[in-house]
Length: 597
Image (cartoon, rainbow, N blue to C red; front, side, top):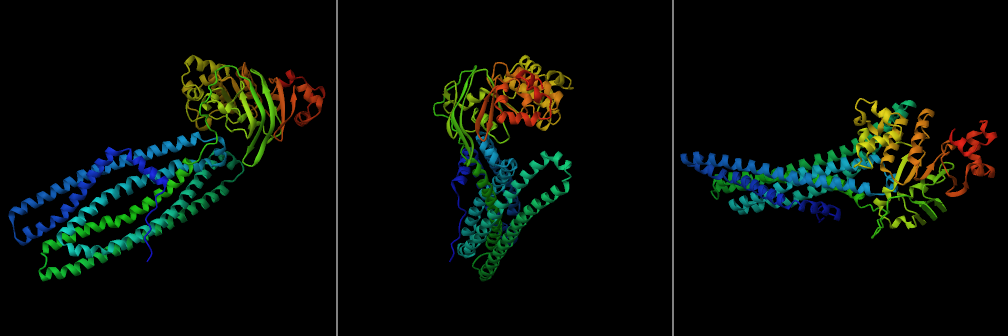
């Protein structure tokens, strides 16, 4: 005979139980309230006996007044206790969900950049929203119901065993049979639900990409294509949902049939004893009422188990993220960096991303306050090189040092306080101009904020808005022009006042007028800072004290503009590609004239 497999709880699932234990006092009160509900349910079934015997058989008028009053008291007490139980258990469940959601988000924030390059944004959003919502449903309905129903079953079993012990034992032979479909269908639902959650995550990722890229979709006339793709993903989710609905629909009729068999047996077997005078009619009716009440929570167990299995599937997906470990490890006794100017050394640095070697044997010293430009073809390793400075990634070999201190021995938070970044794509948040500028310096004064905006050449357009600095800029700064967004990013970097600055293609996507203003703002930003400029357009590196040409993960050339042109190497090729049709090619301008292009 096959053994009935109970739901297997892993260490992940036990962590949820530990979170519940932290609300021990409320849980104790909820259990007491659930026990009261169960006791009142059992009492209401037992009251059938005196109601039938005293009122309908013996015509006792005193009991006619007392028993209805007792029924009212029983149901009033049951209602109050049910409210207390439901509220307290929901409070516990929502507290657990809030803590789990916060823990998941906090953990995601602590994971390295490599994690975000591997994972889809929509999938992460789905785990925080959809998966946690499924667990919430498990707590608020399944666990709440199971605690209440457990006590109800115990109370009603006690009543039936008290009234007719022999018949009670016979009646509940069917209980082991009832357990089989409960767990059999539950296992199926868990498997199907996991597929459904993954499909929902895939749809979230799809929506995130297409809604952010709606301009490209429309520009290329791909609306119908995207509609078909969405319909396909929607059909996949529909198929999973219907599989789950089919399993749920099958479990309820089977429980109904088993309940009907039990009731039929009681009527047949107990009816003979009533006819024979072994039990009174009142006792039998009270017993039958208790059994009728009892099969309701037993029938619910199937639905509750289904909800639990759905929740456990969602738990697995959440803990898949929570169990990821960051490879950017905080030093046991981190060194603090003193604020101020810094010089940076790359000592025999190599960096591998997964199995691809990105940087090889980089040796570089950048003096305090020096401006270094990194140029080269796309994919050469320029961005990877500067990403090592704030430890977005760790070196595979060698070391990056700030003031002769290996950055792996420095507090990560202290290290990143020394670095400001301005990227090609301005990253702004759906908030006010003010809050975007102070993002890295929350305690800045109003005077400092205004000065940062002026130095970034952003003050005039900000004050032209009806709400000034309190103006909401929309999702990703969508209500601003490209130049305006970039100048707010520069104001944010100015306000942070970090001594190390990384400019990653900061002007490459701007028109000439916007670029001129942004270049002025960048000039203010770079003053006195150790700066790395990544650029494809050579016209944007006129500020640089030194130019490094990076190709295939190596520094292949370094020097100033004239020196590099004279060598007729990689820099010369880049320059020629950009200025081949320009008369400046013949005159070979110096660095100052190049910066004014």
